[in-house]
Image (tube, rainbow, N blue to C red; front, side, top):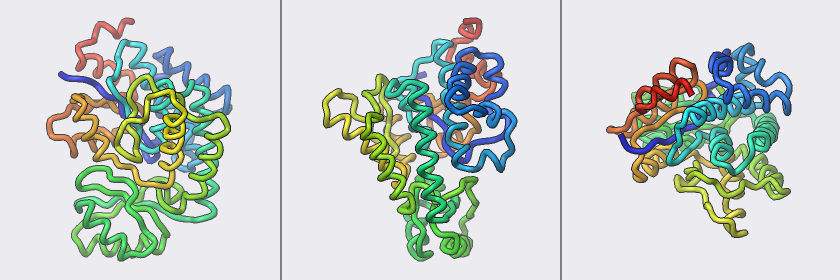
Length: 319
């Protein structure tokens, strides 16, 4: 087995009860939820007891998934699992940067809450939706989206799965085009056309917020950026800090280059990917993109134990 990467889940993975059992058993996970509750009372209750409808509102999704992601990663870290690199899908990138030391847990949580507010406001101003297009390659989906009108490929998830965001009417047209092309179109459980031009205002406002003393510090672990599929600059020079802030702000209104991100991690000698946070979406994307990789999920105590077993660290369960 080679090196390990943590993959931090994004919007769409949320579900009622996420990470509840892990927080009950693992002090490091529980501490993250306590930090979240101190800044935004009721966050852990939303994660553990909230309805799916409540969790699907981006103003709730982002703080909740961030907390769940980071809680899972901190639990693994407490048992001695040290990733060689990390990446996060969409909002998961904020959790990845936080884990890598660019923010404290409290700073990262405050940032993701502000990001959620900005994106929710943009979604309200420019109503939109998202579709996952399956069984078609990215180039085909790009062509169909162009035919549909105000629709843009925004998440390059795997070779045969691309998510498109845009206007509801355009996406309905896209559904028909995808059917004709023998593909499959599925709604994504989000409340806006994220990572599309509809989020331009959110991106600009996030850039302004980051410029007010909230830019990410140099990460202590390589963080592969959604925007470029390359590592965030790790230097302390002014231009590095400016570049990091730009990557994080622009990510909101630009596509997530996930296929390229996984290949970049693979090129760094990583062959074991641990999805931290709710669900198993990213685990599936690894399996569909990288032929020889091992993909593991860590959200529950049982899954944590299985990860430690797979890494040959079963004794660390007693740590």
